[in-house]
Length: 84
Image 1 (cartoon, helix red, strand yellow):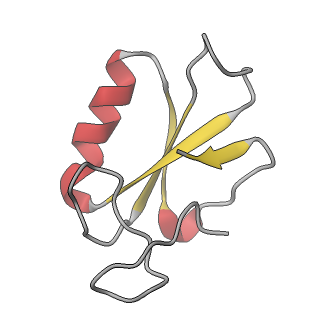
Image 2: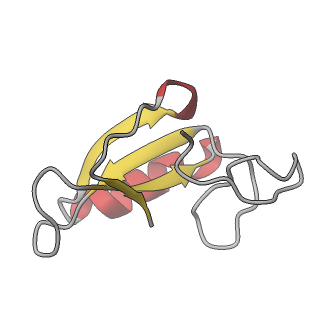
C-alpha cells in the first residue's frame, strides 16, 4: 500500500511529495516518529521527490525523528504507520 496517493500532474493515483507546495511525484518514503508523542514502534510517513528528499530528511533528522528512508517502490508499511 502506498502511504498516500493524491492527484498530481502524473495521474490521479500518483503519490506526491510532502514538501510544502511541491506537486512532483514522490519516489521516497521517510518514516519517522516523535518520541514525545508516539510509541517507539509507531511510524508516520512523509513522501519525497528526488529534489526534496535531503531537505525533508534533514528537517526530521535534526529533531531526532527520522527512522528510515526507503524507495517508494520498495516500501512495505506496517500496522503502526500513518501518513502525516
